[in-house]
Amino acid sequence: MALTPRRAPRQTPIVTDTEIHTDVRPGAAEAPPVVVPAVAPPLADMAAAAGLERVHMIAWRDLDDPEAGGSEVHAAHIASAWAAAGIDVTMRTSAAAGHPMFGTRDGYRTVRKSGRYSVFPRTAVSGALGRTGSGDGLVEIWNGMPFFSPLWSRCPTIVLLHHVHAEMWRMVLKPAALARVGEFIEFKLAPPVYRRSHILTLSSSSRAEIVELLRIPADRIEVVPPGISPSFSPGGARSPHPLVLAVGRLVPVKRFHLLVSALVALKERHPALEAVIAGEGYERPALEAQVRAAGAQDWLRLPGRIDDADLLSLYRRAWVLASTSLREGWGMTITEAAACGTPAVVSDIAGHHDAVDPGRSGLLVAGDGGAPLVDALDRVLADDRLRARLGKGAIEHASRFTWEASARGTLEALCAEAQRRRTRG
Image 1 (cartoon, rainbow, N blue to C red):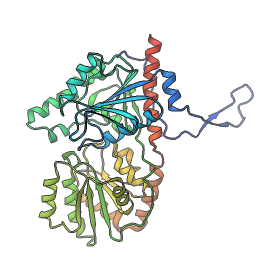
Image 2 (image 1 turned 90 degrees about the horizontal axis):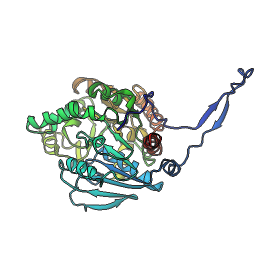
Image 3 (image 1 turned 135 degrees about the vertical axis):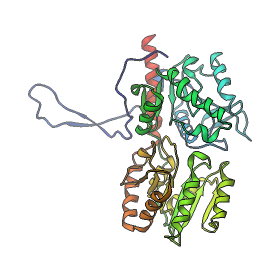
Image 4 (image 1 turned 180 degrees about the vertical axis):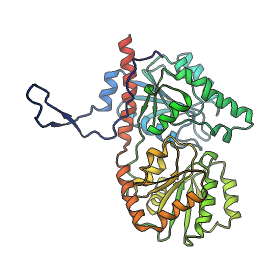
């Protein structure tokens, strides 16, 4: 992709209610500003003006994959919003066990081909042959391993990069030699290929980390936060006993073993404590063994993957949402719980810096769990006034984020790339 003229990084506004116009005619300097309601064009009109009738999205996994997480939730919301606006959207991913190769979801098409790792070279070959990415626009979701779309895409392209994977390679890939290959691709091979790409990420803190670790120019990276479904809202009664909730895939990067240890220590201070770690993943046997060894089976539950209704109920009943994750582009469970009035105590990492408004909607905890995490959770559980204040701030913070704004901001970026190509052409 050719380099566009340098521009200041733009963070997509979450909510735009008004535009302020000031009279700048001579002698009018003291006139008050005129507030005029801003009317944003519908997504369909934006896409039509940019010539985006057919858009391809490429990702490692889709929402039906057993290991689907926040990245897949984000992609599904964007794709469904665009499809509802009349855009012909096709999402290509690796195969998902128990699901057909071709299907539809919420108005967009799904194509599930190839294995866990072969999906990357096969998609690139398909793109080079003009099959994938042959529409009016392409969205690459760079989730650890890239598809290297700048080398083969022939249409306007944007790249969604949620966060740097860094230590995750060594946590997930064995033997160590394979992890080193992943690190080499992420830190050495990919950055020069993507230096001129239009990259979107979810948070300002993740953007700063991408600039620092991958050395991608800051003015090529735009921030478009994720949204929150309206179904996540306050309601019902809190648990009568202190309830700590964590939600996520049971994989090494989430570091749930640190949370289990902290909860066991916290139980000594709060004898009525209950805890739920909801999610599925290959770390489940190890976590279950840790819970059994601590004799915590009666009050610390691992229910596995739960449906939306049960998740909403847990968000509303919990006293605090906890996360010990090492890497996040955002931490969508944090803002989902916040929309239900539940504050958070989470690890002090990029992504969490934006999902939490520190001191107002939750607390950030430095380090690798241990005493600081126990103390922070204890502080929120023991102080009713603090918990109420953080809960109120959580609702206010979460109200800033909508999927409509996220879909619009992402489409604006793709439209800008289409306009750039049209101008050059």
